[in-house]
Amino acid sequence: MKKLENFDWIHSFFELGPDFFQAKAPDPVAAPYLIDGNPDAATLIGLDPAEFKRQEFVEYFSGNRPLPGAQPLAMDYSGHQFGMYNPRLGDGRGLLLGAIQNGSPHTWDIYLKGCGPTRYARGFDGRATLRASIREYLGGEAVHGLGIPTTRSLAIIGIGELVFRETPQPGALLVRLSDTHVRFGSFENFHYTNRPEAVTQLADYVIEHHYPELKNEANKYQLLFRSVMHKTAALIAQWQAVGFIHGVMNTDNMTLTGATFDYGPFGFMDRFNPDFTPNHTDGHGRYAFGRQAEIGHWNLAKLGETLIHLITPEVITEELEHYQPTFNRFYNELMGQKLGLEILDSEFTTLVGILFNVLYQNQVDYTLFFRNLSAFPGEVPVALRQGFNNPKDLDDWLEMYRKLIEREDPGLEERKESMNRVNPRFILRNYLLERAIDKALKQADYSEVERLRILLQDPYNNRPEIFSQYGIDPEWYAAETPESHIEMKLSCSA
Image 1 (spheres, rainbow, N blue to C red):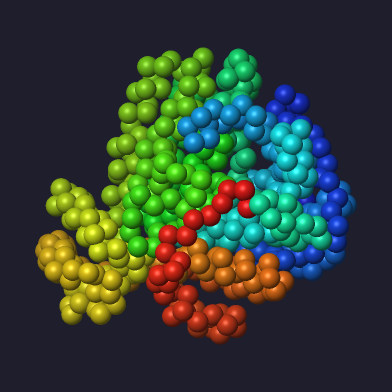
Image 2 (image 1 turned 135 degrees about the vertical axis):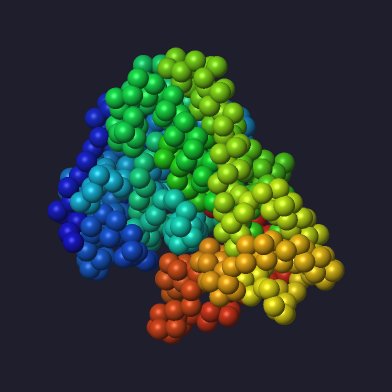
């Protein structure tokens, strides 16, 4: 395990040249302090977790002292936001410090968010609120714990300065880790400014660093697009299966490696409602839960448009035709695992379709329903019936479900164990997240941030010793969202 001063940095993006970024150092801050360090994320870059305790850690990652070996830069990109093209994006408040390779071909970018304005800041202050930093920190850990590709965060660093949004708020910096920061919008930036040679250069960069197996293929750009399409479909299928709503699926928030990126107004489903979006500015529901697969296709089409000098429009259209079948295949497999079924035929599809209608009509908690379902067949658990306004809806569906179970004849315990491995007991409900944020803002108490980070490392199992150590009451954290907090909406700006 290494000290911060001994990182083996890789600066491949810097080597692309100044057309792709602005080189800039972080702006210093007043009185930085560590709010929480993530030992699990530290292992990704080979960092000794003991480094969190050094004053140099907060000095380096607050911008008050240059981090040895780093070459900070603000990346240039544009993107479609809520369906409208915005040419003036870019890293307005974040800097890519470089990448770390930890004894394997895989690299992790280290990115500092909230470190002062760059030339892409569009007049904003370049800072991040403590509220938003906690949200992204815990959001990434929640999604990672569910086995879904995502960015991670190494640490949150508080600063002794206020950040002005709707109201003055405590500021913070987030140290983010990602396998890439190249977005769909990175390609759009050069396409819409008529710089196809830069699009080609960026595509070659992505192939070399993230899809090296394509490097010598004659149709490497077509295969690149196909690979991105495949990973995007798989990612969104995983979101849908666990009830995760991204909330801001703009093209500048979609990466070329198919990882969950940017935790603005995100959320997990409470009572099943396909029209729900946690983004209070999304009045038309563009990024609602039930539209995420569709938006994935739309975003991929915009990426495809940037490659028309490398791939013919006909080939792009042909590749996009495989998106929905690919998504459906991934999604059906995941729903089969959630239901403990392996035969995914028309009867299975009917079963799933009726289930979602039943859950919606009865306003049943999505996560708890699947977790409690593992006890079936046998006497229907009381917990499974909770929330059903019309119990007959559940009974009729369970009879259909029983028949599909019996035709496969799996053992109850084996099926229960397999279902509980994919149906989480704990999710990051927004009221739990807000409780942690409120303690941090009002009391400077960050214990709940740590507690949720620990809980979400393994959302499937009880861990009595760990729970006792951190004061985690599993029954409380696994409970349904209180009525007053159902379908909480969040703000992009905070």
